[in-house]
Image (cartoon, rainbow, N blue to C red):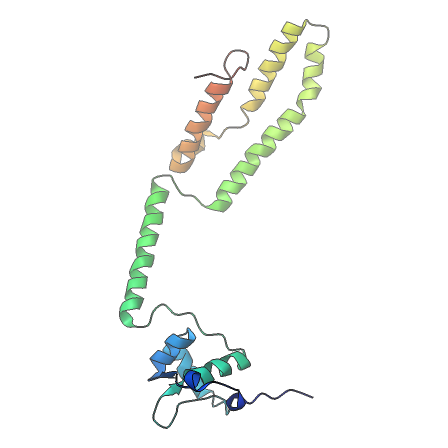
Length: 199
């Protein structure tokens, strides 16, 4: 048998029942929604909806119980009045301008573009390193250790160059910065016999 809940039969203290909203705006603030949501709920003509009292006030406690019972989801609100909405719009416009400026300075790019390009770089480097065994073996068989080391180092240095961007990247601010960083790393780690530059 389906359980029937009588909102008015809920045991609520007198102090709780004394919590009133003077109008729909105050009720909306108490429930965490906007006034239009309250108005829409009232138009539904639900017989269990607390509505408003004869003196025009709204019982916040009964409204909360009704919202919970019905599983209503209050609509998100930008603010309680026109001024709040305008401030929110200005904040969003400012945020958009900041993002556009960051993009022009080369500090911001699309995450999909970045992920795709880095994945391509890593894949190329991985495939190149995995293929080293096929070419290096024949180059180092029968030579001295010193000569073998030089040949291996030379081959690895060439393969590490796959971790680089094409010329196209220098035309985009973000990728131009990445190119410069990669160039510095190549200079740092590809010195002499591959020894790391010490400061």
